[in-house]
Length: 97
Length: 380
Image (cartoon, rainbow over all chains, first blue to last red; front, side, top):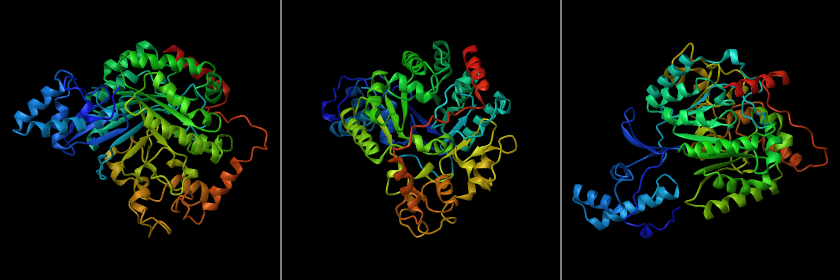
């Protein structure tokens, strides 16, 4: 279960794409897509980097640290982006937290 | 943010067979069903899936009829997985054993969509025309979730279950579904044949819509509700198939390729078969696919309408069925000069003075064939 408030997400939760939701690079269209039941979602470059790290192994905090250092970005901004995306996808049941 | 590259299809509905143990009176299959001996063989389906991946198809919907009636289902799923296609099994649940579900999961199946006829067992079995179907569906749902596969429950709404639309959402939650489709009946195929018995009154339909919309909010994060409203009651038509030949194609059990499952009812369209042409040729060049692409075919009021890129003039099949001409605006639209036809049908749906009639159940052939179908399933 999840609720819709991004700030209430625990930094210790380990987000993962559940079975039935797949991140796929479509070589024909040359773009990353999120495949889900009856849905094909286009994903921008930031979302792809976040979702690639949602394997159920890393905590949300660790994902934010990783992204902030990999892309030399401000941590609080990355934190906001990650929480916003995961909250939106969890509401659609496309990610488990 | 749905991917929308109109030059390439996104989804393939593979109707592996028309055999099905159930007889649902709203089935979207055509009245003329393909018999088993006309079904594509395993090698042909695998070739079709390979051609689908090459043309840009991302999602493979394995449907029917009941796809579990095919003994090569696991092999077909494995082939789709090898190609990287997202596979979705659309099933009645009858014929799904624990062993079969676990083999499908191992073969790489991505998702299962299970039909439920009602939340009341007796009514559910009556609608399906199959005693014990409801209990077997609950069992099938547990096989799916125990195998770790994501489950969607699909419920078609009509007069016999319209008061339990919300109860069916709650049943889907209890069954462990992550997603539920509440779809008001669309009147094609057997649904058109049984329309008088299926159509709820406007009041009943609106009450059901309100109930389900409220659940969307209260169950957010628990289950995703996809809601298909009844188009006869709408002001504008549905954007049928997201536009003719724009996103999906449908292969029938005998290999005919259609822009939508009902397209064969439009006279004069020429459909090509996978035995004679590649999917790429069919998508780009077959006469049926090009018949209503773009907007050159449109008549008024669609041609000059600002909504033509939103709803594409509605449904060509419905336009043909209700006005006799597929190029007319879908008469569901209040701007259609034929809209009175829909109003007349709706007025009749409120008339309960006739004694209830039995459904014309969807059957391959008369009852002897049905008994044989059931044996086929249990032999698996």
